[in-house]
Structures are given as structure tokens and as C-alpha cells.
Image (cartoon, rainbow, N blue to C red; front, side, top):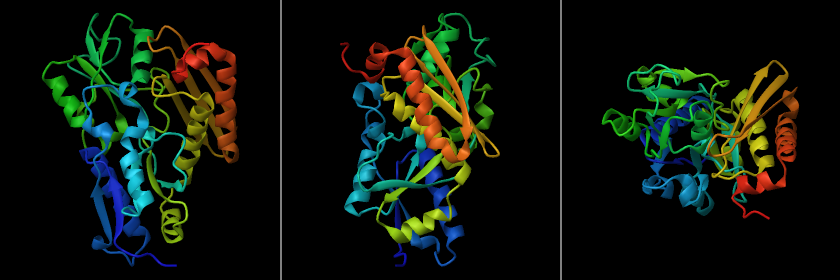
Length: 316
């Protein structure tokens, strides 16, 4: 079986999504010399998550709103590949689709962008901070309950414009996205994981395709970055075991040291009043097991009533 160009690569249309799609295209061309520039076509797909900007993801349905239309194109055959920010991907994929490769992970940390202050501690009392992330909201409120946190959605440039216009005094963005857009200069502070644990798979770019498309699978095997895949596999297994939804502030970061893996995770109440952390270590070869067992231990420790609240289910 051979590749049949053009390979149609689906992506969202934001500047960051397009930058990531072009990174994938460059990796594909480097991996397969027989492909030329015209052999890989980037196709912009409008998703509901991009179209609806006046409500938070928790209100309109969650992470799948950034992927459903793109995945439909894969299943229908109008697309051959899809490029995703892995932090936006649900843990369960549609039948027939797989994440078959990831590019090397960029800086997974969160960045504080503020008008003046250079740290969370320097934010004035009562400052208005914009974020649509329950994870960031909860961790921020845990250390600075005096701050006023308001929803702030939109792509990177939109949020930076709202900050510049004075709608908020500070916001948070992923360091990885700012680096890929050449916007590191706007960062007031890169927050270490001890201060704000990042989203599951933050900083990783995933490539999705049909599970039975052997030529594409063989090509993607040549661009896959195994250490990144190992890390995010542990993190996604942790998330999957918790069974959390977009209404649940959950964070995780797996780091590799040779054949060993360190996983840190947390679950918080949305208001940040309760933050429950866990840490585990294991072998790289058992990354999925380490993640799943760690998530299961945390869920068991917190109990069924708390777990029901995380998942958005009604209390028993």
C-alpha cells in the first residue's frame, strides 16, 4: 500500500492551530522525501468550539466541541489527518480513529500575562483576572481568593487584545502556544508546576488518523516523538481514570528521567477551596498503568460523592 497525495490535513483556523498544522506538514515532508509541498494540503475546519465565544466550554459541552467536525471529516474520508492540541482532546476517541503520532512537546507550563505585575503574588488585591479554564481558576483561587476571576475566551490574539483594552488586568495562556507564535515577549512569568499544574497533555501536538489507514500510519510512525507520547499517555490515563468532565478542575504532568516516570496530578473544587494532590512514580514502559492507577487512587481517596460532583452527575 502506498500514500496517495494530496494528504488532507484538518485543523482549526486560529493562528496557533495553523502554526501547529504547518509544523506537522514540515515534519511529514521531512520524513518522506517523495512528498513535495503540494502533496500535503492543510484544510481549515470550523468547529463549534471556535464559533461559540460567549460561553465557557463547561456551558456548551466540553472539549469535544473543538474536535467533532474535524473527526467527522476523517471518518467520512474528506480528511486524511487531523492536527490537535492534545490538551483539547477527550480521552475517548470515536471508533475507527487513533492518535498515531505526537510531535516533541513544547514547554508545558502556564504563563501569566499581566499589565505590570510579574508574578501571581504581585497582582493587586481584587484584580480582575480572565480565564475560561476551570483548572486555572481553581488553582489561582486556592492561593489568591481575593482576586476576581471572570470568563475570557477566544484565541491567543483575542485574549491578548482584551487584556490590552483593559477588560481584565491579567490572564493565563499556555507557554507552548506563545512560543509557537513567537509571543514569548508578552509573558510576565512562566509558572512552575508547583505553582500551577498544567492541563493534561498541555504543550503536545497530536496527529489523528483512521485506524485502518496503513500508509498514513506508517508515515506517522516516522514523525512520532516517543518520549512525548509516553508522558501524555500517563496523563491521559490519569484523567480517564478520574472520569472528570470539562466541569472538573483536573491537572497532571508526567516527566521522564531515563526509564523512570514521575507523575503529579490534582483535582480541585471549582472555587479552589479544596485542592487534592497526588504523586506517583513508575517505569516508562508502564506509563498507561501508572496514570490509570494513580487516577483511581485519587478518585477512591476522595469518595463517590466528590466523584459525582466532578463528573457533573447529580448527587446521589
